[in-house]
Amino acid sequence: MSAERNIVVLTGAGMSAESGVPTFRGEDGLWEGHHIEMVASPEGFARDPKLVQRFYNLRRAALKTVEPNAGHFALARLEREWRGNFLLVTQNVDDLHERAGSEKLLHMHGELLKARCTNCGEVCSWSEDLSSDTRCAACGKTGEMRPHIVWFGEVPFELETITNALKSADIFLCIGTSGVVYPAAGFARTAAQNPSCRLVEFNIESTEISRQFRERVIGPVSVELPKFVEQLLSDTHRQAWLER
Ligand code: BV8
Image 1 (cartoon, helix red, strand yellow):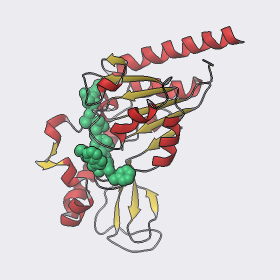
Image 2 (cartoon, helix red, strand yellow):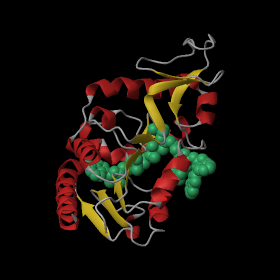
Image 3 (cartoon, protein in one colour):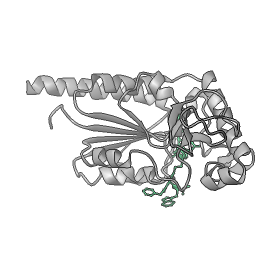
Image 4 (tube, protein in one colour):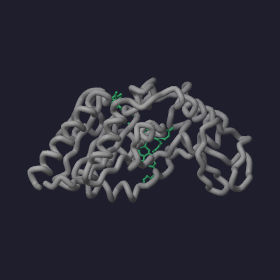
C-alpha cells in the first residue's frame, strides 16, 4: 500500500461541540421549541421568514464568540502534511475549519457567512444580520436574500465531487456525526464499496452508522484527533521511508 493514499474526511456538529457550537441532537433537536427540520426548511422560511432569519442571525453572530479546537487544527495539519489526495467534507455551516487553516474543504450544507439572492442567485459573503430589508448588491432587489444554507428537502452542494472522492478513498474518517441525516449518513457505505478502504469513526458514543466501521475511536475530538493524526503521519512517513 503506497504512501500516496487518498483520504476523505466527513465532519458533523460533534467536531465543533467543544468549541461551544451547539449540536443538533442536543436539547432534543429543538430550537426555541421548534423542530430544527421545521426551521431549517423552505417551508419554514415561506411560513415565517422572520423566525428563520432570526435562527440564522443568532448562529451567525455566535460565530464571533467561538474558536477552533485542537481537533480542527489536527485536521488542518493532516491536510498540510499528507502526501496523497485529501478532501475535508463538512456538514457544519460554521467557519471553524477555515479558521484552523483547512483549505481542501467543502461545505456540503452551506455556510453561515454566505447569503444568496433568491431572485438572481448571487452568492456573497455575509457577516451581519439578514432581514426582509436586505438588498441584493447584484440585482438591487430587496427582501430576496436568504442564508446560503442547504435546508431539509434541498439538494446538498458538491455531491458529485464528494461521491467521486469517496469512491476512490483509501481512508475515510467519519468525525462527530450521528449518522441520521442523509445523504451524508450514506457516505460510509459509498466509501466501503472499495473493500480495501480503511473506515474509522470518531465519536463520544455509538451512532446510527457505527456498525459500518471496523475501527472506532471513542472520545472527544479535541483529544483523539491530534493523537490519531500524529500516528497516521508517522506511520506514513515510515512507510515512505521503507518504500524509497
Ligand atoms: C435531500 C444545514 C434530496 C442547516 C442541514 C433517507 C432516509 C430518511 C430521510 C431522508 C433520506 N433522504 C433524505 C431524507 C430527508 C432528510 C433527512 O436526512 N432527514 C433526517 C432528519 C431523517 N435529508 C434532506 O432533506 C437532505 N436533502 O435529501 O434532498 C436529495 C438528496 C440527494 C440527492 C438528490 C436529492 C438535506 C439535509 C441537509 C439539511 N441541512 N444543515 C442548518 O445547519 O441549519 S442538516 C444538519 O443536521 C447538519 O448539517 C447535519 O447534517 C445534521 C446534524 O447531524 P450531525 O452533524 O451529525 O449532528 P448531531 O447533533 O446529530 O450529532 C452530533 C454527533 O457528534 C453525535 O453523534 C454526538 O455523539 C457527537 N459528539 C458530540 N460531541 C462530540 C462528539 N463526537 C466527538 N467529540 C465530541 N466532543
